[in-house]
Image (cartoon, rainbow, N blue to C red; front, side):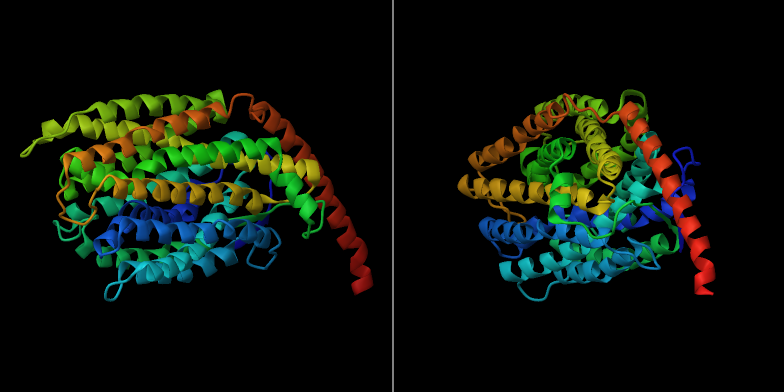
Length: 477
């Protein structure tokens, strides 16, 4: 473990080996997000809980959970320890998250909505500690506008590998572990429970945490906090992030149902298709990062929104595959899933990098480091987006008579309702998210000016601290 002072804007890029070590916990968290977002609701419906019961449990958890991230953000921004600011939170979050995963994916008996609510709360409390500490820590690994795209690109790339690795389990295990099948969930749970502390340990031991100079005290008032989070720049990012989360997120709890019942693929094949959607991020993350370095982050997000709308429309227009379909029959859907995943991979990567730029703007204007608090704004929108999709979509499935139990046979009317739920919302919401960046002003030129002013001020603060130390040394002797 090491803690070093922040270097100026022109410092060398963070070594790739350091970035890999830092990004390792994101692999496990991405795998958990995949299981919780796509398969966990279906798993608990299959255990005998109705759509409304599962939706109610998830809504309750998210309503409580959305208040947690800002509180954690405030606590992290006030944290000063010999281990650093973020490392203690990362270490503390691992066992809490692992316990929640174990209880949810390896349940005893027939767990009901209360059980689901309790252990989702535990899991998400730990995951919030992990996600926030990683997101804020990434912002201080580099202070450069373009280098941040690289940092978040690498972390997202490894997250994609983590999620894809779980999707490959049917191949690795010769069909013994298949995401989407209830009998496989305990094995998936053990994989996540074992991987999480290992990856967190590597990150905590090998990643440096740079000290950011500050002209203010660690404590700050509610007025200071409100002034930061109510800035037009951050509000625009938060609103866009919510729309861009809701868009692709609407499809997550419906994914298995849609491609199995509406498109004709088997459960194992549905998991195989998801590999191409998630795996596209391995290509998309570095590609969007390079595009952003040329055109700017907000313009790149807007371009990705247009591409997403086109790709999603084409994917929806593809016909249902018939019984006994071949690989050739499935090829158009594979290409469509890859295209949609490639476009969607831009959203999380670039939004997080843009928040890091706003952190610098706030620190220059107010002299306060509110890194984690500002990142908590966008992690909270992700949680809100997740609950909105489930709370809206699951009751509609109940209304149209769709049966979500494993092996159930649904009527054409119920399947048509499923298709309508899957079709309209993603494109509209993504376009709204892109439109919110018209008039956005924190571009590369503006951020460069901010960083130059910050580096000059940080150098003055460091010099003043050194002089104070030297003057004070004889008095302490």
